[in-house]
Image (cartoon, rainbow, N blue to C red):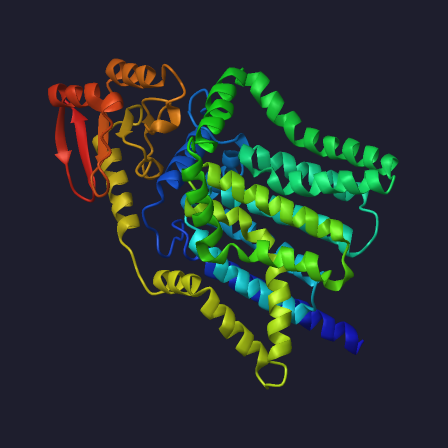
Length: 488
């Protein structure tokens, strides 16, 4: 009885700590209703597309984008019921799941106290990368960490992986690539090693079952998406916008020198070289007598992840998909540090202090958002209300530039499927013509231009639109970072 009470108390403490860590991360989100602020450019377009879906518009046909459908579908329930706050709650749930499975993964290497220290350290490592919300990296995280947990459990427990777990791996893989195609490296690395393992150890029957059940997991996710595409006849749109768009955006590096430079930036950003370094050390010292195949899979998956991040622009938020790999690495470091400080009374605090120094960038970012209040969110709300006051419910609007900052704060619909205009659509031959034709033909009631940041003018997209504004529109407001033009 005493043991049960002690166990329940321990579980309560664990969940409280995971809750606090989740809250500390999502508090810095641009969706935070207590500190609402202008979103990242990518985030604003994600939210605008989700807003359009909740109004009955069809993804890819009525709303152009180069991300997979699950990126947007995950956000639909939260936005439908709670708008921006609903997205914040969605993020909270997703990040809590991520922390929970990171804790379970760490628990495979160390005891529960060390596992909690590990998760605290990882939360600090996440902060510098947590800047694009409701996006591909955040929404991929639960599928990545659940899969890493299953792969790790398979090799550490030294038991055959269950068919149900293989099925879950297939679901996670399918969900992840339907968020963004280049999210596959974790499964590619580990699955390749498992295939080699099965061949070497002559477990061909197991391998056949693994492949079959894995494919079943993939199908269970792809089937409803396939039916959605058939119903709305979206295959051509999906191929042009997502497949071709993903390739053009995911492999932007044409020079080896630029790729190497990106690789150096990615692997050094907030000590992202640590998992690779620890993985190699694991392999050399045969840590905890864990099957060597696990570390081959771990290292291969991590290297592939870094390579595919570096092929693109190497932006900091891409590093978020590396976070699951931090779990085994930091669990190992936590154990070493605890052993070193074991003779001191407050050894746990000493280890936490060390991680605060190591990941001080995360401390700085959290502190900044905890103690700084912004008014950009209120400004967006004001501009959104003004747009609704100046227009009628059936009027259409358009925002010129590569953002969707204002759309989520107004109830008006969009005058073009190209709600944002950027090089994202350069691979679509008639994208610019379609956009210009939409605006010149429909002549939206209201046009906005964001003026508080970078110049949003793109000559090939906007030159004719600016000429139209000069002839048929009048400037009615230039406050709060937006020029608002109303058709005369």
